[in-house]
Image 1: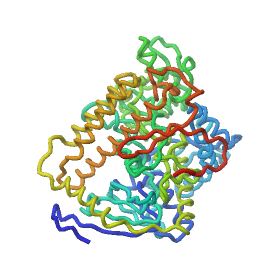
Image 2: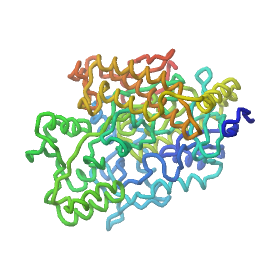
Image 3: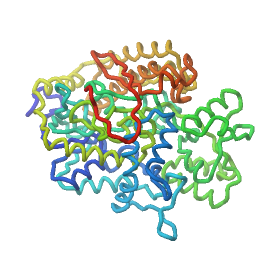
Image 4: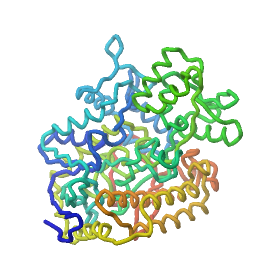
Length: 569
């Protein structure tokens, strides 16, 4: 199958597979491994980068933050996550994830991950729920296992741009091969989306060349969210944004300081303020913002006075996961024990691994589109999943997809659907000129979100009037994004990434406006409704796109560990 329009001689390839996995990160890789180990079904994994170093594990991690330690049970983890999220969670999702945390950890160790152990051969814990690991090579270990699996084909540098959905049944997806200049039509009986969350919606801490020095991978653009939103999938809790508390300038993690050496949050007067505001994730950020706002900043994590051994431990730990922080200590000529570490909040992100944003799924991680499953950061309702939780969800989604395709086979993607998406790609390639490029529109988008939808500029606060302004401006940018020009498929990918972010922005704005309360300080700081309102908003804020507009759906809480199934798709 070949298109004759001759822009770079782009060809088209059609492939049929049993299960298509979109995203070769943590959840996607583990889903592929699970399918290979439990069936002979054909699997294609599409990754727009390369699975060896892609997703949130690209640079490695030094701890597994979700584990059931000795003396604890899965329900303890459910209770912790539920409290941290002020009850807006899916208990069924948290419990089914928590029950698998330890088994997927053992599987990682079997694959070659070095997990630190004490003299008795037990895992070395860090806090109540964490394990220490040597995790610089965690992603290459996963990638190697996937690439060696039977019946698994990995398509690196293939960017999926859209689902193919007919009558609420997924038939596959469309992608562009960045390096082989190919348009891919991928027919599948089931699809698992594992593309991660959304970064880059808001103006980041650092400008210009350093704008991609952020907490979450800048290449995670909300693609999976956006494709689902456009296809009519129900989404949940986008208003529970995530804002990370990080080391100033380097945007390095603070957990290693807080848990590793017990560093407390202090203001410029040396006062410990963390207990004053609370210790949930959002409260730690809010306390820091408020101390600065009231003139007691800057704020720090107190490391002055730690031991020489702790100094060396911190420098080694950060050299593995955030080298810029270690370099900052070296360049200053002072160890952590001689200077406190200044902290700040990042811009907001939309992630289902730390908060509950994402697809509305049933207990088996099936979305409201038949045949489409979600796992990892892209799946909603199950916060605090981290690495091991993403692995667990990849496993759950994979087993459910295998069960689904026993009796369900999708129709081939319709030729008219193929033609529509090929024409769209060629439209970008063949356009002769444009008024704006992707970087200019992305900067405009981030400025809008920063100023009117609760970014760093407004201390994460917003009003309904500001959200109305944000929505109108984002709609204008969406219209402009239809007329972009690209010289090759790499630039076509940048256009789709911009459009994905804009789609997610509109959903975020709609969700922020719908929750008329402030349940999570900083994460959703609504100045029109500054108090928590359990009477009216102890419920999920969900949404579905209908005729180009975001329709809000309120759903009652799903309590307990019993199975939840979709009833009104």
